[in-house]
Length: 443
Ligand SMILES: [Zn+2]
Ligand SMILES: [Zn+2]
Image 1 (cartoon, rainbow, N blue to C red):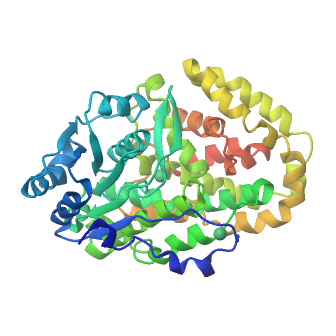
Image 2 (tube, rainbow, N blue to C red):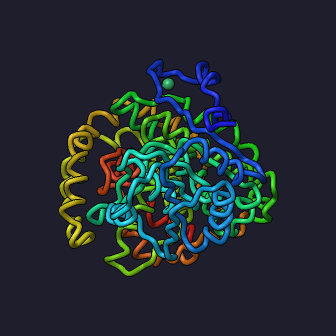
Image 3 (cartoon, rainbow, N blue to C red):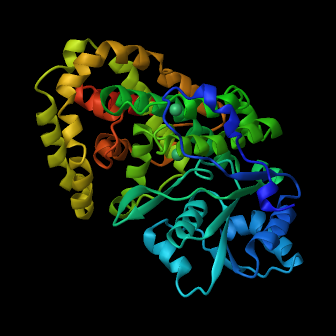
């Protein structure tokens, strides 16, 4: 059987009725194989697909032990001798890391990433930059980036999500995924919970500006949610069905981003908080926590913002606030960002034109927006779900001081041009109070 005969992860034939925007969505043609024999199947496909060209397998010390070594063995059994790059524990995903990975390589035809977040972004980004084929072997249900058409990369200190072709094929070994450490499962659970707030961020932006919202991406993920959202204890206990359900949900969440043509369905203001924490490592010395766990702090913050906004009168979001608010936030950037201030300022300035329209657009659309805000689940609901996975969900547990959380939460909206609930909350004058309330809930 050749790669081209493997089933697609999702069947586009089912998309038609779910799309309400009427615009064409990008094609999703990721092949997916899951089974205890995933690595031998990968090796068979590799012999067919790679021909005589060299295969580069990238993993790290942990994922090499969990799966990489078995993949290498399976490849060697089929007469393929891959170049193996096993990175040490603390890899940071920057454009320089990707360049180092590829420097001095001969003819590479295919990159196979064996790992989760960073390894996956690295393989995807490098393959994209060099026009190579890219396959992935996920080792944990820890984040939703496996299937997405973006890679998170730090460039000149600023975390960016850049377009990168999704893998052509995914080979998932259920036991490897299931036996991933509890903290990685908790991280994946939180990463996918972000959709509950980010989807509303996207709908809000769409009403105010772009009109780009389509329910298709969310619907693609929603079908899987009943398998894991109601069962946080089963995620904690490593229950096979719940963890597999979570993993499938994460793969579909990446597909949702590809379908939307942006990360908007799965990443809003809550993700910006996590990106800030990653970016500030070199300024504060604080090692970032797992992506999903940092995102979780952002989910609580966004949910608090939505609750506050749902209780506001339209008159509170009225005239004359936009320019002064923008100018005062712009002034804060150097103190928060030090050497990265120019890069961040450039990002924030890119959304000035939209932010100054808030004075008109928010009151005009408030009656449409409030029911959306009101429909977002309350912060206590998310806290309860996360805590039932066994993760305490306090700032302490994410290794965050209240001060660093405050700084990250208040500056998060300056690092990206995307409009999120954090912008609306800032304009409405409730962001500071929301940050305090969220800090209190996670105290
Ligand atoms: Zn659509
Ligand atoms: Zn995420």
